[in-house]
Length: 517
Image 1 (tube, helix red, strand yellow):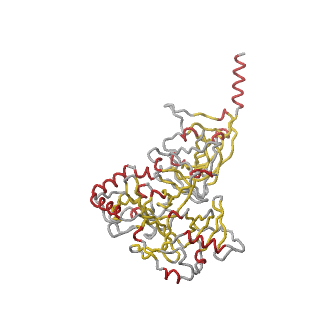
Image 2: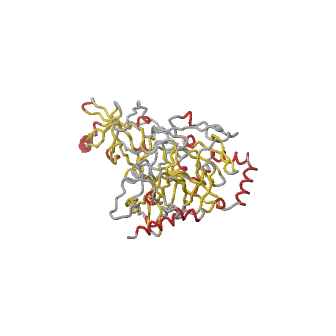
Image 3: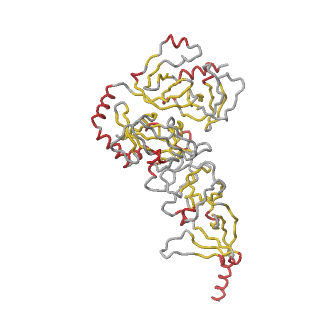
């Protein structure tokens, strides 16, 4: 009877089948258990590079509200590299609450494999091998290596992307809305909270620093305060196309970094983002300031924990309407990072007398306010607190029949409709020949949201309240095209000319009044 039971069990095992999905990496054919596969998708059009990532982490992409890290299996399996990625496939592997995308050249087929055709490998140290077995098909003519999802996701530098637990309710109406400034560093799209930024300035001719190294590229005097400048691309481990030029800068000479996508970064685009947090005063040189982005807490996606050394630097990731997502940095983690702390403290100790004099001067002066400067033929500025966010011009503006001539239409922006105002038309200025590169300032007035189309966003500056100059009433009355409406003050910016300050409340009231039929 025991022999019969054994024979029955062996026969059942031989009849048992397991489902596998097959994939190709060059000449190598691999298999994954279907139970570990969530889905297979094309290589995404928008992949977000991740700072300080290991070489096999190609980036992140947004899959229906979840960030998926893409892992290059060629590097993990020591296979020859292939530069072609556009036609490759991403297999989403899920194990527990962890998801990772594995890059393959092509997908194969779904295989029903009897147990007798599966060979299991074991390591002598007891750890699960990445190649955990093989499938012998077609009489042994076709061999597929079996990937272990558990072993892959357990490797030290494979990102652990934990998705949100099912059933978590998003209370969007209660979520706090926050503002960030986004910028480009090499090919990465990063952002910092607005509250952490003191100001943003164009790159001046910097002074050599006695504490300069591969990251600290110089220092500048910002109204009596010595500010060390960090090459943020080098700090974040992001390579520019011209790395030799991007990392060196001497007094009176500026560098030209290049982004990896092929478009040059000109000296005119580069900015220094000045942080002043937790007694750390430092400037971060970035390749381009992009925009002001607003988000709710529930819209912030979780970043993968690919390295315990670096994960604290990232507060999360924001979706970006089909383009590369925006990685939000933690200013607290940046300002407590040993490398930045050492640079800031070293300069503070070296120039202590100058810092104390600058602090005393600030205490004796007026209050300082932060303005966003933009261009509309002229250089204009608005208080940053009056802006909700800044977005690129959109082709999805819907024209509304019967609206005033300065109303371009309405735009659907994250479950909200806003009226888009052509400020050039409103002020009788020449129209845009091409509005592709224009920006839209999002403002809110008495519960109504408006998008103000302007030529370009220029900078973020802090202005001493005592430096504002009243615009003569006679001049504002003579501006028959409406420029005087809300424009009652100006300030001189060294080397930039006169900045006219606009009160957006007055402008929105004019829009509301002229929109009444």
